[in-house]
Image (cartoon, rainbow, N blue to C red; front, top):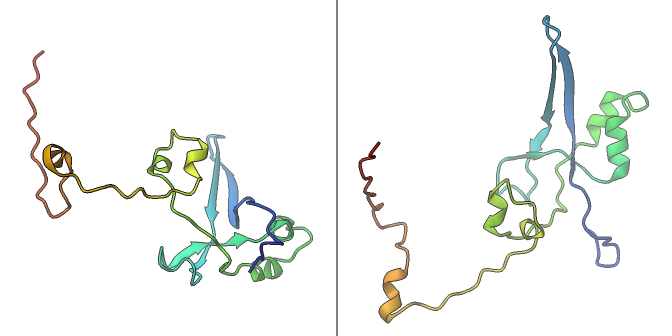
Length: 142
């Protein structure tokens, strides 16, 4: 676990993967890659049973990429589920691939809203127990 004194700020989340370049008989070039996955760490198991093999720091990245110096078995031995991951909720802005702003990574704090009463109560969305509303689709006129 990293202490506050050791913390140097966020860094890239580097993952181990494999890649290949293939030329078809028609001389077309195809690039492909795969991210290696492992059984999830305790930290991430609530999300999914598998997680990417995260390379922890520049030394591990160098070992993974230097296939001439580092034997395959040694490179594979560094692949272990990482426990020291920290996460926080983010805005739904992150769900749109066109968004590339700081809002996508800033911690999101839900704002507790007051219960609407009176004239504004009808503006509240129904809960998931409500049947879906039927939409009226007018005939298109050409």
